Image 1 (cartoon, helix red, strand yellow):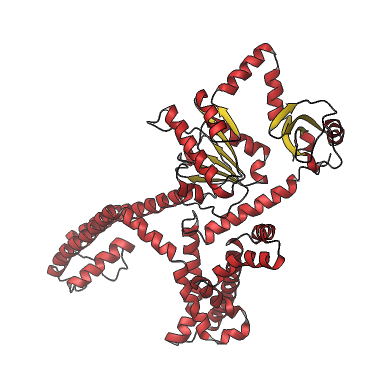
Image 2: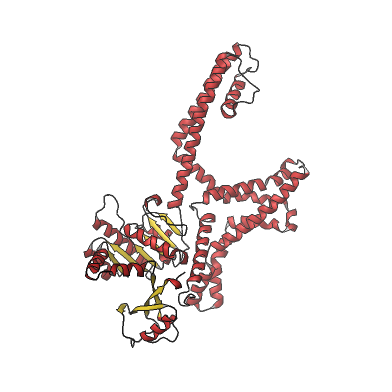
Length: 511
């Protein structure tokens, strides 16, 4: 059976994947703290520098290149120009959402030209920035007549400043472990100088003409410890050979320690960026999950199982590390490590543009359950202030706090930790088998969806809704009218286009 037209899930999945691609590209190209920005900038720097070698040789060194090498350089420049052209237009695409901006501006202004101007404005603002102008000038030689202007080709080197984030990150990584790195470097220098000087004394006394100055001895020490020697200078005394072996052995230890320390620092920085560095400022109509708990684990498993993460962007923000979550969040769920009670962190995950926000009772060491509920309340108030239109669902740990959230904070749903489970156990005792029914409704055998009546053409009563939905293998269970849910109303119940139906969709209709 084909998919009911009122679900529109295929289109949503496509749009969701496009949004996720756009977010990923934005964090790769434009975000200052994107998790893969460092790797990308290093790769782009390599392309910039290597593709500029021919013009540097041509302008400053004036050395004719062999024909085969010239052909390779010409082909490589073509590839580099295509690469940077694609990059330029990708940056222009991800900097703003033209379609969404146009729709919002048109609804506000009711004027086609004004809406078009509003939608184009963010992209024009980006295009006139210095880095963007450099990017544009660097790709102009893709037009063959402009390649005669050598200055345009040389301007590509200015893109080095565009990718300075990589250099800054490397510097920051070194600064984080500066004392350890400095200790290893100083030890390495002392090791080379000390042994080289001692070997020089022995070899000079033995008449080894290769060691005719202390500088030759230092050169021998550096080459020996780094490349195990060229063979142009070798010791001839037993003491010299023993010290050379000692130099190599100690050098392996010190160089390995330096490499390991530097690598660990870079990996640690990459892990930090993966969690805390993700910025999703331009995200819209996404589901935002704040906090982590046992309920969150079940929620995320259901989101991934039902494919909701492919229909719309899902963002998880928590102070837990990814490895502590206890569930594979998949490649479609966007994870950010951070304190969701802080306004700037909520802004980084685009809380003002979220369609739904779930706030879980995230327990932390040293916090009582009441303090956890207080953090939940603070987050709910922040989100409510930022995004009054968002649907907010909260998990509370204390029963008495539920009324505060519902009446004073005006959230859309309150779930009391453990209360639903208790009621389910009681219902199973009174009505055996009800737990299996609910499990099938919520998991593999069916799925409950909320459908607006306006999507069902010609439906004006609950009885007509039953007839229409049964044609698609679906069954309405309840009606929501002005926030009030009526379970199994009479067939004669009138429905307005603004009402909602809770519908069970069979597995044959789910995709």
